[in-house]
Image 1 (cartoon, rainbow, N blue to C red):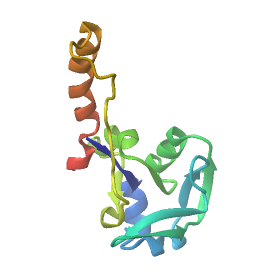
Image 2: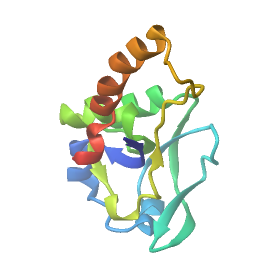
Image 3: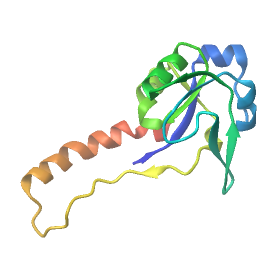
Image 4: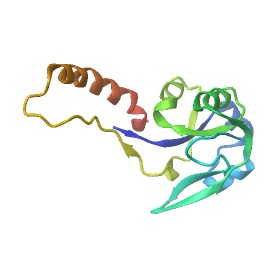
Length: 143
């Protein structure tokens, strides 16, 4: 599976404010940002093979993705998080994806373990347990 950076918001917000067609329109929308690995004032997007940092207007700055997701589901604005973090909200129609054509390249997800001729049974049991669950959790990519 893969993990994607996705932009999403509540359907009520999009009904009232419109769905952005391009990342440049985010400057006119209320965005919910959080401090992490990327700046809360710009979000990177793919324009063809080029990555461009787009300025966003932060209506609300929080310190966790969970808080940003809750605020977006409540109609406060648009947020950008990792796909697995909003999979349940997307499936439950609490959040709607936007700007799908501008998502940066997804990140692959791998389970890494030491190469051995005979795999320890504990590792095999974990892999048998984890792989289907990870595939299901990351299946938002099929939406």
